[in-house]
Image (cartoon, rainbow, N blue to C red; front, side):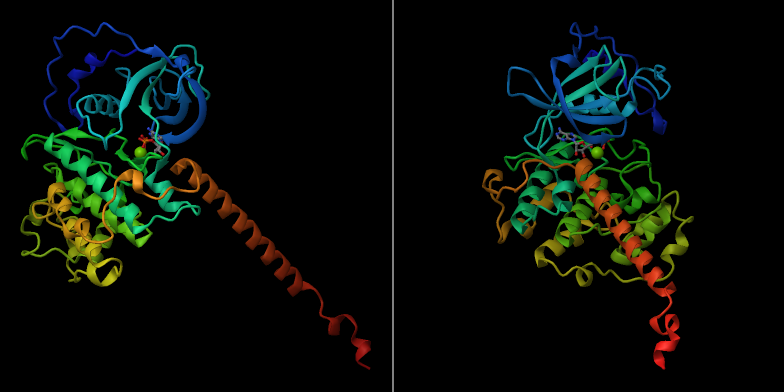
Length: 400
Ligand SMILES: Nc1ncnc2c1ncn2[C@@H]1O[C@H](COP(=O)(O)OP(=O)(O)O)[C@@H](O)[C@H]1O
Ligand SMILES: [Mg+2]
C-alpha cells in the first residue's frame, strides 16, 4: 500500500546526486483503495512494468486507465524498496503539476487479492483519467487521417503543457507520439511521466540514459549530464516533423547510427553552430562521425508546409543553448497562419471511437504476418510451376 507523502524522500540516486534526507513529515493517514473499486474492462497499453487497463467505476460514468506498478519482481519477490523509481517519480511529479494538457492522476489502488488478469496479489496501479486515443495510434491507424488543423491544434496544446512544466522546473525526458494522449473532445494531454525530473540549474547532474532513441538530442547522445529543458524541445521537433512527414524522421537503431542520422539531416556541428560540443564526455568517441562535412538539409528534405519546416528547423538546432524554448515555439508564425489553431472541440471527429498504440501495433503485426503468408504462398506456387515439366517435355511425341 502507498501513502503519497512517503514518496518525498526520493532523490536521483542514478546520477550521483546526494540523496535527500528522509522526510520528517508524518505518514499520510489515508490508504489506497482496492482495485476491486473498478470493473476491469480491456487492456489498452503495454507499460514498461506491466499492462495498462481500461476500467470503470460501477454505478457511475467514471472510466479510468489503470497502469500497473510492479511491486514484485518476475519471480514474485518483493522489489528492493517496494516500487520502481520511475513510478515513484511519476506519482511525485504528477502531484505537483496541474494543467489542462497534462494527464490527471486520480488515485493509486492496490490489488490485494490478485484480481487483475496477468497481475499478482499486492500489485499497485495508478488510476489516470481515461483518454480515447494516443497520437501514435492516430498517426498510424489506417482508419484515421490527421489534417493540418489537427496537427497544429495538437502541437499548440502540447507546447502549452511543455511551457508550463518548464516554467515549473520539470523536464519530461520521454516526449514522443505514444505518450501524447488525446480525448474524444480533442484535448491533448501529455502522459507517461516515468522519466520526468525536476531541474534547478545547469550544475545539477542528470542521467544521460533517457529519452527514446529516435527523439534523443545530440547532447544526450554525447552523454552530457548537465542538460536542461532544451532536451524536450528536440523531441518536440522530431514529433512535429513526424506528424507532417507522416513517418519518423530519425529512426536510428543504435546510438552511433542515431548521431549519424542527425548529422546527415542537421549538418555536422562546427565551431560556429555548436562551439561547446568538444567538451561533451563522448565527443571524442564519436568525433570521426563529425569529420566529414555534411550540410544542413532540413529545408531541402522536407517539402511540407513552409512554416512547419521552419519551426522544425529551429527546434532541431544542434546547440541546446540556441534551440527554441517552448514559449518561443508558441510564438512562431506557424501557429499564427492558416490553417489556424482551433478550439479542440471544433476538430473534426474520427470514425473510430478509440485507438491506442497497443491495438494498432497488433493490427499492423497481423497484417504483416498475413502479407508474409501470402508472399510465401506466391513463392510456393512459382516454385511448383518452375519444377513442373513443361508441356513440350511431358509430351514430346505430340510434336510429330
Ligand atoms: N490515461 C490513459 N488513457 C488511455 N490510454 C492510456 C492512458 N495512459 C496510458 N495509456 C496507453 O498506454 C500506453 C502505455 O502507457 P504509458 O504511460 O506510456 O506507459 P509506458 O511507460 O510503458 O510507456 C500509452 O502509450 C497509451 O496508449
Ligand atoms: Mg509511454
